[in-house]
Amino acid sequence: MGNIKYRANIVRSKRESEFSEKKIVVYIPMLSGKFHLRFKLMSEYPFSFCDYKLVESIIITHEIAVNEVINIEYSGLTYYLFEYIENLVIAIYVAEMTSACWGKEITEMTISGIFDFFRELSNKHYEGKPPELSVSILPKKKRRKNSFDPISLNSDLLDTKKILALFKGHRHLLECDLTDHVKNVRTLKPYPDKLLFTKHPPIYLAPYEYQPTFDYSQKEKALVYILNRQGDIMVVLDGALILYRMQGVWRIFSAKNFVETVAACLSKLNPRESRNIIDTFAIYLGMLSFSLRNNRAGGLIVVGKRNDIEHLLPKDKYENKPSDTFYQNILGGKFLPQLPVSLLCNALSLDGATLIDIDGIIISFGAILSTRTYKSEKEGARTKAAEYASRFGIAIKISEDGPITIYRKSKKIFQLD
Image (cartoon, rainbow, N blue to C red; front, top):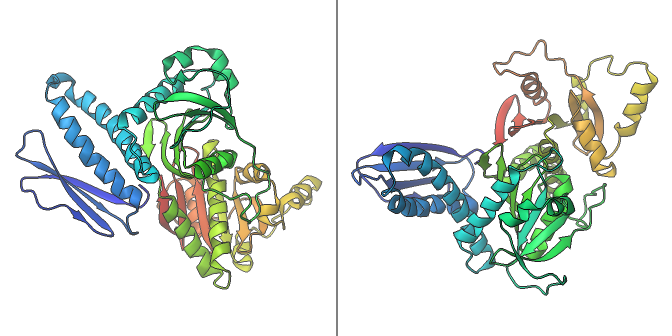
């Protein structure tokens, strides 16, 4: 949950639950009834609507689980309880979020059925790779454009390789109604490879290749499930990523806090720039970061004043080779949105750092920073380089299979798990 800290302990006495701007304390009764689990959440930022919905989902899940696990044999209780509660929390959380967004109820049974379908699908392989598939649920009925009869979204679909081959990729959607029946097949138009800082098309805090899917979700207020080529599951609601399952672990994102943290740092570096431009720049950097991690590539982005971050470059920053000059001329000195996003992601994934000034001009890419004299207690060359570079601006470190971390003045100020 981003920068949210949590603490859990068992207590005998129960007090009133507390819901404040930056602290949530709830008391959940244990099976014996004599003890309570005190769950405390604290945050540097005000809690969002998503955070409150998660806590509500935990409480509701517990009430359901306690009544059902009593009849289970003790030998199998632990494994069953953790698996059952995790699935139930996720289903209730998504149902609560969706119902609040739509103003109409959608049950956790519907959500749970789709998750079961996607979990089973993620364990299958097509041509040696996990299949790709996107499924959406719409809040209202739409006229069916295809002539086929509605088909249930269940395991029968998984047995047909033709289905997996036909709908692989990130632009095809199976549109479902509230009963999980596929009513339509939708193919989305691709975004242009150059995303300018304008409102058309909008930029979402999501991987580049899924920008059309997020745009569709926002326009239709749709709940969308995405299974990517790595076997990860993304859950999108009304144009925002609310859940992400990577390597078997569910993660909840604080996208708003990520943008606010980057924007606040950029504002200090460039106080004369308008807030709208800074916010858009922050979302653009987030899109690039998500794109790298979605493709299991790491990177290091450093943004700062030109005179400051140029000190990061070694004195002999370019060798007198035609190839080095050619590569630098492709990206160096170019305005970020004028470059193809696909080309940018390739450059960002190179060993070394990508240096960008506060006006969005690329100074260098694949820069190897001189950190020999910098002392750090952290392990990892990229982490050390991020701490060192953040002395001159803001550093965003993207891990291949882990968090996206923001550094400022050699300190970690935010982490998006």
